[in-house]
Amino acid sequence: MEKLFSYGTLQLEHVQKETFGRLLTGEKDVLIGYTLSEVKIKDQAVVKTSGKAFHPILKYTGKHSDAVEGTVFAITAAELAQADEYEVDEYMRVLGKFQSGKKAWAYVCAETESGRQ
Image 1 (cartoon, rainbow, N blue to C red):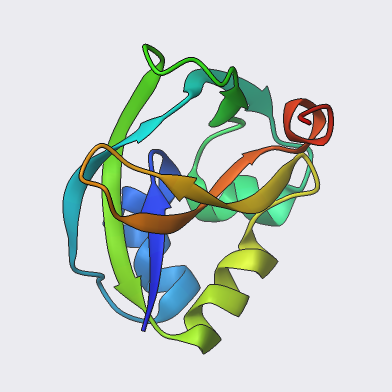
Image 2 (tube, one colour):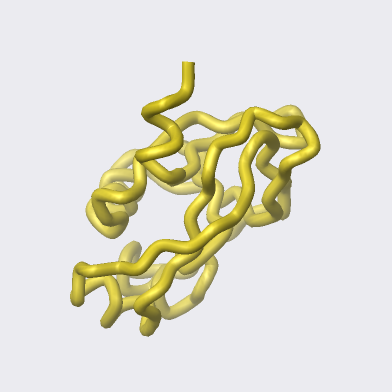
């Protein structure tokens, strides 16, 4: 099983049903080194699924004091590929470190992540 952190629309039941065909189960956790911002979604199919034109997005800071709460869901590799399809180009998937000590995939701002060394 894969682990996927959600801090935004993938926590919504209707988005889970539309994207994965089922409701997900998960545990609350906190991603370290990021702050929460937002991005305007241009893909109308994603706006239709989520019901929102603006989605939250994580921006990398690297500061331990910066943290974002969300849920880590257990999903299959096929469902992870479905999540990749759902997310727009402004996001990229990275392996994050969490307050619990666990690791999980998270979709973060591609622009701030690409400048990371």
